[in-house]
Length: 257
Image 1 (cartoon, rainbow, N blue to C red):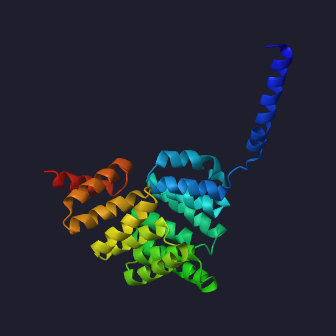
Image 2 (cartoon, rainbow, N blue to C red):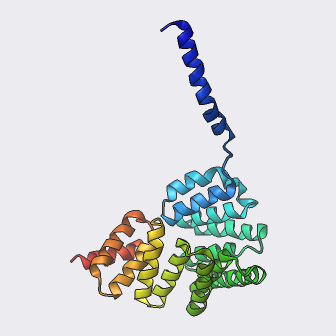
């Protein structure tokens, strides 16, 4: 190949690569909310180490950004650092005093720390703030999801289902809404409904580890030990450090005898 032909080929290759390089350079960095959302999906799947790797660079922003604070609070709770988690979420309440997600996740941390009375107070705060949001924005599916989840934690199941049904009507049945509805039905011991809703959630997103756990409990109550074992096996593999994992392993051991 002559030098002129080689030079022309090189010039053509560089010309073809230039738009790709410009596109790569132009790609915007993910926003803190996007990073927090990614970390949240990893936490749903109990991918705790991966969530920390994603979130660690943004952790200084937790003092000023509610999305980051919520994700960091969830991460610390999953790492069983309950006091640190609660501290982060309480500071987030100062940053975003009207955001119902903050007291909801604070309640979850306090519940894991076995501070039931404090957890209930936080869940009541989440219900109140979510109710105010819905009163202003009746089509706010996110606020209805928070409201329904907090009501379920307060054992006000019928009210929880009503809020979650409204959320499902607005959001088209997002997997997180279906999961909360299924978990609430399991708490109500409405086992067949729980299986249906949790299965619908998992069909849309297999990353919610606790959906397998609650569906397994429902399968057991419906006499489907075979399906219970499948779900419990999946759960303990993906979430071996979850607080529910010890009970799942005990149920598995009993079922396999």
